[in-house]
Image (cartoon, rainbow, N blue to C red; front, side, top):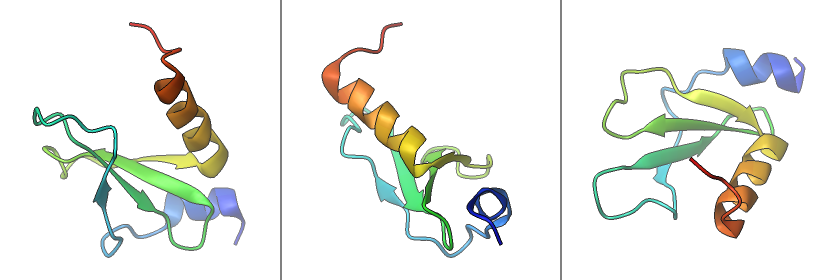
Length: 75
């Protein structure tokens, strides 16, 4: 199975979710998990775990984290 197919078909029910290191202590919590069988990440809102997680490639996740860390994202 290709990485892109696995990205969207992988079962996330047993993955290990961890809070992002960028989560503030204000209940705005983002959780991240590795997607089994793919070099990709799943991202979800810890307050709304019933909503399907966003799934992104490793490269896209690294780009996003780098942009957050550098402060280059604006509202």
